[in-house]
Length: 321
Image (cartoon, rainbow, N blue to C red):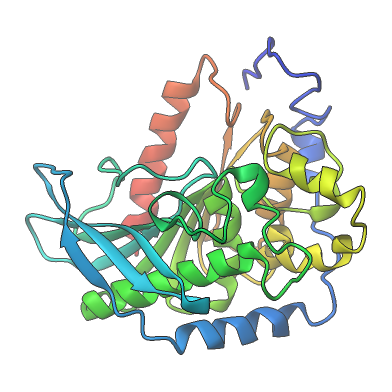
């Protein structure tokens, strides 16, 4: 490992942990009715016809057909994003790709998959899915309806992911049984919350996932979205109990499909103990893989080489989809 020695933060982004301590982390206990909460939400979400609508896109690429897409989600929201499809070869797989809390300005063309239709949804309130009822910036977005677990915006973002799978399957029925998910940071946490309940998602890749181990997420200093929740908690202690329903590490204990987890040892935005709590929570399986990064949300000397190695792992991982 080559942990960054210099940084501008007022706290240590390793939180004093080494690999031994990271690997010992486990998720907190689940709240009562955790499974019922999410199973009921999933049933409601997939009862909706997403009615995907494709339109022309100004972004072009030599190897990919590019479309803008909108589809119906829960609560009357229409989710927007991009769909790319290979110009050559048959479509045999589907992949939904979540974004970080910075949003998304377009599709990614360097994801190492072939014969794959890739849907890049923008979570409700963010980027192309902007909505007047939801603040777009991370510090306020993460607080939207936080006092009500049923209407909390993160739950709606999970719904958007499930409906993305529905939209992708409606457009390409042949991919059924060959659908994966990939998400980073915010998208990693939302993915961990979504995957356990959706049997259509058969492989998942999460990079530096957030929302893991809420007792730590709500206490460790951070420059990420957790900071605004910690400040809100000072005058709204009642939210602590129901935030357990949005604990990505607790959700990960329910995941029963192969996962590729990329977690960082140094990260000022998503505390590494929270990331490792998600990765460590997966039920034991030879099909799970963990890739350890020196740092996340921060540039470092070996970043280019590590991300190239991770990309190669992603390629091999999704080839089995």
